Structure formats: structure tokens, C-alpha cells
Length: 163
Image (spheres, one colour):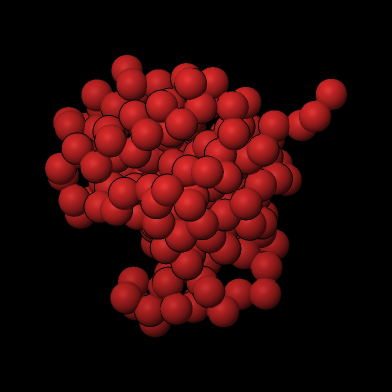
């Protein structure tokens, strides 16, 4: 039996780096990662053509910026339409952002401790420079079971009914 094709649509480079190292750990799966903020950009026809019935799609995005969820709703609709409803969609909603998710899933008091950054504004640059973010996270008692578990506030809380 063929394994389902797995796709990740992530907001930025830091999410791409994190997912690329975590996708071998349950509940995540190995798959293709695309940088695309599904809150603000439409899935292109060429991307949609890659997604066949039976695929698994992860949508990873923050809730601290854009509050209009109409584009992500449209993207979910496009995924379902393209596959005749035969797609499994997972929302990995970062409440408020990636840094907050990392704080909740590790034992650090501030996210700068993970990368020895001078400030929160340096964190992403330093995170991208890490040879292995998984090694650093593991040193700080990382639990994937705590990532993406916080219930999002309005309007993001209404997205799960679309799945």
C-alpha cells in the first residue's frame, strides 16, 4: 500500500527549519515543506496539482499578526475541492507565534535562552544558524506534545470546523 503524500505549508524559514527536524517524530510525518503564509497567500494551482486525494497537509501559521482568516478558509476549500474532499488537513496554529510555542514546549523562561541570543529580535536569525535545533530543544526538555496545543482565540478558533 502506498504511503500518503505529506505536505507542509509553513509561514517562514524558522518554521521550515523546525518542521524539517521534527517531521520524523510523531505526530508529524516526513513530507515536502513549502514556505507560504496560508493566512495571506492563496495556494497556487501548481501547488494544488501536487496534492492528490489521500494526501496529508499541515498548515502552520501564527495568530499574532493577520486576523482576517478568509484566505486560510479559501485555501482549505481549495484543498478539499482539488482532492474531492479526500485530504487530511492539520492546522498547526502557533498561538501567538513560534517563539511562544517553543516557550510552552521547553523549560526555558525566555526564548533567547535556546539560542543564547542577545534579544528576542535576534532569536530568529540565531535559530536559523543552529546546526541542530532539535539538539538544542532536547537539551531544554522539549516535548512535541506541548507544541500547537494551546487553543487559539477568535477568529482562529472557528477554523477547526472546516476540517
